[in-house]
Image 1 (cartoon, rainbow, N blue to C red):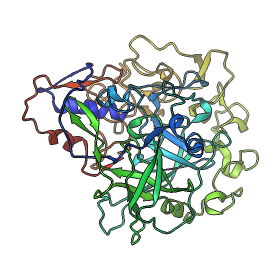
Image 2 (tube, rainbow, N blue to C red; image 1 turned 120 degrees about the horizontal axis):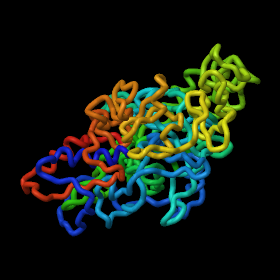
Image 3 (cartoon, rainbow, N blue to C red; image 1 turned 30 degrees about the vertical axis):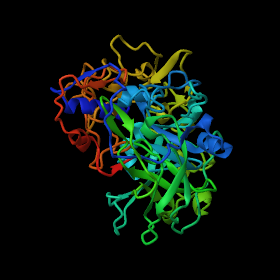
Image 4 (cartoon, helix red, strand yellow; image 1 turned 90 degrees about the horizontal axis):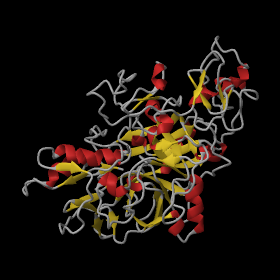
Length: 522
């Protein structure tokens, strides 16, 4: 269940006792108005298939990356990975007449590929390496036509190896004189090239000028990628060069989106903006403002993230003009355990354990999941790795071959996540055998939970979702993590708060004050 569905459910929780949460579609005929805004002038968002600029379409397909919670991707078929989740209308309660209301919404944050295995995003999207490991990073999350998503395969889905650069300081993005930064660079578990191609990062270290055109590409509201090429810079903040503001039509889920200049070079990272939707009767509509006399969306300068990366001496010839060398401590693209064992031994999996009985060069080298080798191969937790030493129809769990699938009755999460050696999935209606591994990452519970209850529920509150490990990414409050429960979610991601029994005097600010900050992180 994406964070957008959780937040809509939180509205129902807030109004418990005065509103009922049902699966009924909202009425589109209400006439309430709002003054909050996130679309400036015309709504310039376009789907990949619907945009006239081939260069921007290619950029979207090659370099734009979506963050997903692991349970939001069904990876049971590596040649046809499916997005799991409700539509925008079901997940957020927007009116059925709103644009993209029937499209799926599942992404949590956005990012841009800037090197073979490096992605640039907002610093607040992930709080730690552990949080990063709880997510998958996917290309090809866009509409190929009006009705269908483009096919996503295992070549499009990656895990997080580590956070290389991260900085989150300030937090108001309200136009003050103090510096405010929000950016990060993550390393993927393997190179995304040649299947995908990095975007070019601008080398210009000057501030953008008011009136400069900018384009943003990302996953606003968790939707498939949208291209907005109608933004203009409002304030370049030349005195601080920390962020700039612009009239981009962006939403929660656009956090981390690449912002591009007229040459399609990355100049910024979308991090903050105004409220996305407001109630229009008993459903929600996009907020709209004129393009003048507004504060705009906050966009961190990309050059600061690149500067931090290069100041570390990170071996990136593309970004830092520093050529990778064996012995520099980084297992770079083109290096492996054979060519550079000092940097790549274990491929990130660490020292080969004494119990390992297979060829030492097979351990943690991203060459496939080696089963029945006396110890768990770190490759077995990497998306898309072929399984060796098991029969057809089997996968590897805890270094043992087990039959694929077979999720028990009552299992409410992605069937491909059960007994898939992809982490311990809690709050899914049944026990996941992956939880037998005491060192497995735990999904579906917040905090420092290390395993599920025997019935598969979370140790806290009998299995309620506390927001997972998303550290304020996507459409989060300015005050921090989303800790709202899932209410009465039936697993479909569809919840509606009807107004039956609601007092007319209930102040709308009660809802928005809890769920949204005045200037929210995207």
